[in-house]
View 1 (cartoon, rainbow, N blue to C red):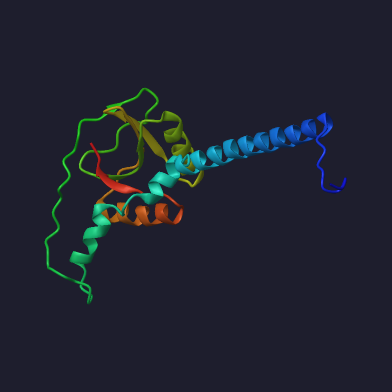
View 2: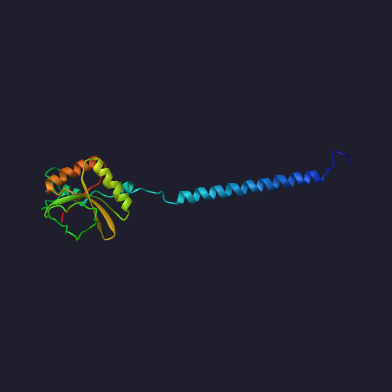
Amino acid sequence: MNSRDQISITSQSILWVAGVGVGLLTLAFVMGVQVGKQSAALRRPAVRTGEEDLRDLPEPLVDQLKVFEGDGPDKLVPAPRVDATAPAPVAKDASAAPAPAAGHWTLQLVATPDAAEARRVADRAKAAGFATLTVKEKGQVKVRLSKATDRAAMDRTAEKLKKAGFKPFAVKAD
């Protein structure tokens, strides 16, 4: 046999092959951990703010029912206007403004268990020029307009609030 046909294995070549093998195994392990972290992050729901949750809500029932009340071609069924809301007892917090006049309507901007979120919405409404009232009811902090008006004026105010980025809905003032 020639010297070309022989393979010589030295301790240095064994150490070199073992080092490369350990390095490849370490690289595969680290990459597997990173892929696992990324897939777990994709499965976790994204953190959402209260404003994003409000944008996902359907239109208020009053707006949904307007299609049945119109005189245009999209009028489906003639229906009399019915007030299906019953006023609920409201426990006001100490920082709340005086209660609006009875028998009138107001707009609610948000109902959330997070008092900080309610404060942010109230501050945003105040910055847009709307006076607000904060009410605590059944574990929820509700932000409403402090000025109660008749239904027609309340609908006009609701349009202004929608243009300002809010999703208000009508509630009967106590």
